[in-house]
Length: 278
Image (cartoon, rainbow, N blue to C red):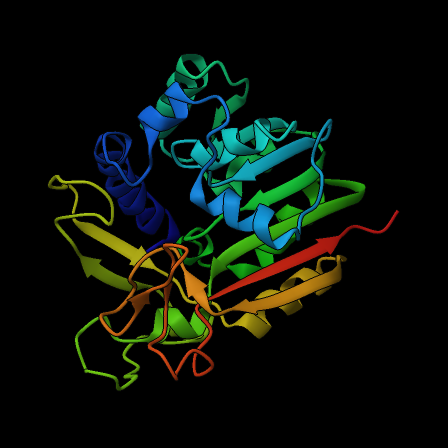
């Protein structure tokens, strides 16, 4: 199957998810509209760990922004935000949320690998990517080059993402045994799945086929280095925003973690901060 067929299948799948996610409690759309200080759980995690730093007054590009809750959360931290996504319904949802919440942001429809042509000759102080994004992209080296090209000299890249070891763990219930049933390295190629539902909200997808791509942590780090970025921080985290597999238990802060006594056994998320030399 050609690359265009992968991304078209995924785009149709994500188009179907938009109204389900927008109406779900998980994304907290009404909270975002009602409370001008409300920010997404993902961005709150970033702020609590103080990795990206102050974005006030900076231009920030959010790649693969979906329905914009993370993007507009950064706007509420003072950034001048631009969100990009390949789903036209998602971008329409972003614009609606921006208007309804009185939170300014620019939103653009573009498939990731086409985004440099859509945002031609534009660069940003910050390029940001949130959880559950790069697993939809087949080529991590091309991804890193696009990230680097979008950065101004001296600019910062930041990603918070599910750890590739976490993605490899079986979603079936194996008690307290960690069972791997998903590849770790990009060389595995596209991984097809059929799912009628999605991870947030209630509803049935019309387009059930999706294609995922795995990228080892070393592959991701080396891609950023080869693209000319300088690493500042690489962190592996022991918590996660959802129950990725049945073994995980809820922590006091509402996140999910390994069972007591096994918190140090498996990383669940990772974050990378890097900068583009002047």
